Length: 331
Image 1 (cartoon, helix red, strand yellow):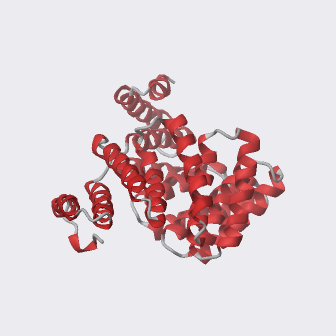
Image 2 (image 1 turned 45 degrees about the vertical axis):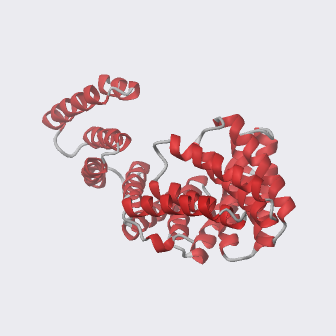
């Protein structure tokens, strides 16, 4: 329909106007409870979601779900899709209990309609696992990620990007448990798969290298950590450019390794590069910029330059106060 064409083109105002007309005509011709009415409501929900208007999106999805439950078979896949769409919005809003409830209902429907080993279950399991991870319920997250991994390996084999993604997630959970050796195995297998399928210079390879570097750093293996962070930085710069905000954390970790080694000028240079990117990027928060200034102040203090240390510390404190944060969090 024309509404969908405008939607796909990104002409949201025209699309929503046409969707509303379609909804009105559909209800008049088919009644309020008809699959086509549900479809239009869900398309409107998708549009509002893409615009970031979660209130209107969830209203449309919930109306669509009400219709679907009345006119479709109880195990129809459209019901599962709508449940997960609503769950995604609850997750965005931080309403994790509600999100998990909806994901669990979707998972139950998938198991009943698709069986225990369908790859679609792995997607829902991973969404649930991520919520547990974000809420520091690491054992719950690990259990769900391992179920997702088994399903994906059975469906796709060992060399598959979804398998690699799940291995990376498992590695992050194991790292939180302090199980660095097992986490390293998980990250290394994920790295092997991504290099084989994407090439060694892909941006997603950099993500795994960053995680591996962090394990090395946690073990006190500074040389190995530095090598991985530098390779991560090279890949990020090739993929994103030298001034992209995503390279900030890598610059900072390299700076921290140099600082631990006592190579203070190298450390200072990398912290300053990180700060320049933050100051030039509107997406960087005052809080993160203040933390970088504080790191620079600490390096100057180690170098014996109290004047510059105090200057940067004062700037950091001012940013913290302006942002409404507690300046005593700065170390």
